[in-house]
Image (cartoon, rainbow over all chains, first blue to last red):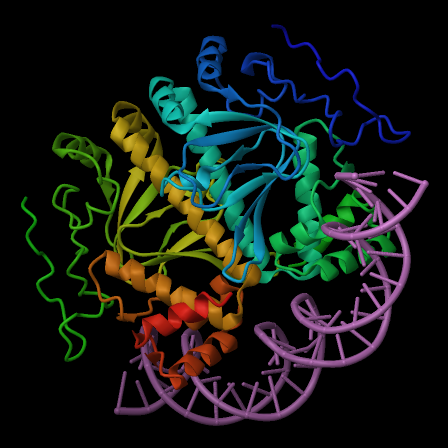
Length: 264
Length: 264
DNA sequence: CCGGACTATTGATATAGATTAAGTTAAGAT
DNA sequence: ATCTTAACTTAATCTATATCAATAGTCCGG
């Protein structure tokens, strides 16, 4: 299997050279195709195989399970399910959330291609949140016991997985700071900039993208209400910093957005 | 060296059988003494050596550096210092914080005996925050490259360190939920309950303890102002749920505190 | 193509917690 | 000991964001 592009039908959403990532077909970078190996996956520079050599990647390949694609709303796992695997997003996007006692959900994270899901379950042996697809998406499942075994054999993999977890910890602590001291506008600007850099990591436009999540999801994630998120979006638009059209977003002035964030 | 109690002068702060942990001398459970091995440390059931056998603990011992005690305010490391080690708290307590552009600090974490500090630096190879002692404290420094090497040799240690990091991730996500949806009173109650269970983990009273941090530290950590923290404390006291006397705190009605938290 | 249900926007009002201000207590330093 | 500074408390006011409410737009199944 060589790294042939299997999408075929990616669609350019508007008269722009860089395609917006889109539901069902699109997303050239990481097709929903189930029969792709780590060696040929276009995400292998950012995902688990990073820093592994050919033969090591092959060994990793052996333990990765490539499930059928997930439809919007399908769950990877649910809160307190037994922890078995971590998951790498191949295409599409996911959200993690917990349900509070009064039934309200709070979103704890969003996951884009190349990112790892499920590490919150490692310690307690059960997942601390539920995770669902935000759109048609595909996943590589990596059974954790096998990942541990292989990490023991491949120091590079052990090193890299420590780094992935360390990165998650550092990222979570940034969000802690964000939530404990930023205003609604600062949080929203920071969120958009974060998405921007994550999309650019997977070679998508850092300035024009589709939000895979609802305003409500964003609000839950940022500790704001839907209405506030909506108001901030229109506010930023009036200031000419962004252009929003439902889920479609364009960052018109990244530096001004950065300036908002670094105010705090 | 056997596990003899080297403190000698631990002082019982009041006419109560369980001593409050206190600055300088006290804290029987984990003396400031520098010459104690992992094998004889009373924290070895909760700290890194957990799940290791005698000979494995001995190997861990070899790489652990037991620095001189830290005085209140001494720094373990500062933001953007090169990442070299993780640290296990032997006695006392520490806080991590980041400075925002306007000079204001935001506390990102508190660390009690048996807890591991510094994992935020693993991915980027530099620490994402500064960490300082809140009181006279002692530390075991574990050079990370050696920990990685040893983890490669000892699957138990690798497994356990994955678990420690996973635990940190799960904990950070709980705080995310706390900050994004809890009221000031809920946050404060949850914070006190958290301290309570962490103290009981190291065999200190879960209902009476000294707060090693200032109100301001607590406020920064919980995304509240000093004044609000102070008001909530007096409010909880008036309701008879706690008793506060400066840094000394007693939880009078744990269940009522739990009820406050689970309201959200 | 239509109907119902999510999803988003916008405005009016309420409120939790910030801010400002002032005073009190505690802890180090000389 | 006493002075000085930091830590804490309490009260009055203000404000950012939540809440409530109403409308419009969008998406999906039949």
